[in-house]
Length: 392
Image (cartoon, one colour):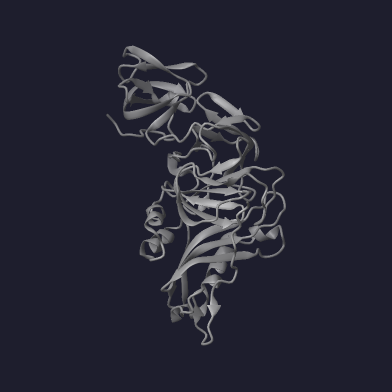
């Protein structure tokens, strides 16, 4: 049965005396909020966030849906969505917000913003689990500052194979190419990593993770209805579908999977999910994904190997079948075995040695594995251009 979320587009009422009342309480909000309701403040912020380019295609300002899920003592917490049109690649814009009543109005912040973490730390509405992710930030927005590790699986059951139906493309058209499309398997969409989940609107769930990351899942059918629920990696979020309640289009059932970091959609290419590295193509919706030396383009099968740990790597022998393991950091040390292309290895520490050139360039860095053997970093994908577990 499809589970629908009831939306309140007007969530703060005006009492007879002109003060604001919290929903369902009958208690007046602080007088400082009198100049503008929290709904108005959040709506204005969302309009500023979407900007005129987001409204130009449809020719009018977007509908803003503000839902206050929690309110107490001059604080408000909820979600806001700017509904998109149904043309081309249009998609809705959404945010989880925190607001605090102050002299002259409301101070509001959206998830991922620095102010969001600051307000979350003070707010009595925010749970301990939420504070643990709201207060963390990751590498610089847009290009990850050289660190592309996500700790995420693909958004379906580990061990299943789905189809990559769309390569990197924008969440709402244009850059950044933050999203991919996936379909197949049992059609159950699952959280790529643990975090706190929010239903932005029917068909759309956002999970906020650590390190400043969040992931969006759109077009879902029978999606969960949550407001800050803790979810583990692999938790059920919904089924693939064609839902466009908040805008956009879908010609066949799938999940539109988007990556955000520090309050913005970021290029998904170069990041790993389920031990696959996403690759851009010549144009939006093209490209593919790589696991070791195996490359899969759009329309190809992609197997979910599970999340890659932050001190782990996937062996990329750059077309070769195996990678030689040595007793020290260089080819001058004896060979003591090999490890196959696509295998997952765990790194205990690193050191400099002989230089080698792999798929991503030349390096003299060697990594000591947990079994004591050494391999060249040139033939490993870690998501970092450098050490992942310090120097030996």
